[in-house]
Image (cartoon, rainbow, N blue to C red; front, side):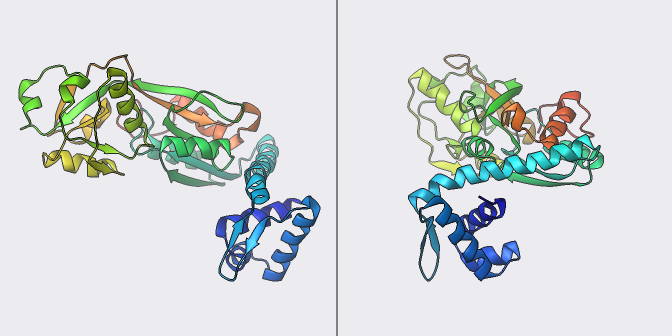
Length: 304
């Protein structure tokens, strides 16, 4: 099995189209088709269902895709490891992060990394913590900054970075702001909530807090960005339970402490592959973060 066959297979699977994949790979469509046929002959199974408009993976193709991605990621890591031994860090750093992650100054961290390793191409992807965990485990990301969603596995390990309590944000004219008391989930049972998509770390924490307290809540106002959430609260359309550092993003809003049922807090972690599979670029980025030499920005403030 040749690596180029796996590269070609992954490209077709991602683009769901032979022509687009061939253009991306800078190969002829006939050569790409021949490469896929060779791989199918070797595996003795069809990998794609072909139609005039698109191609889709067969069951065998779906089984191969994650393994192919993992193999290619390991090969890339091997090349980068040899370059690192020779004193030059090259290749690609593929990083994932949730928005406004607590305790990690992502922009300053990447700026410091680029100054030290200008030959490494940086790629950044924002997504929810659950999806980021899947992409690190599958080898599509070198590492990610996220909220802990699962225990460590053979494909995924975590490094704890920061922790903070959750707080209630509301309009300064809201009745909760007037009371100014420490709140519990039961105090918020009848409120209108603004919150993130269920895959986001803050939403997962809040759902866990209310579930532990036995309080049912609904989220009629669901957003995918922090500023959208703050704008809705600023218009007194709802309240939100968020990590404490969010209160610094809109000083006019009232911030009230939340006493939850079981001490649940928002924990920021770095998600990484097993140590032997971690790329040199990922190790270098973690080294910058751990030594606090990421450069200027919001390091150490909790205001990501």
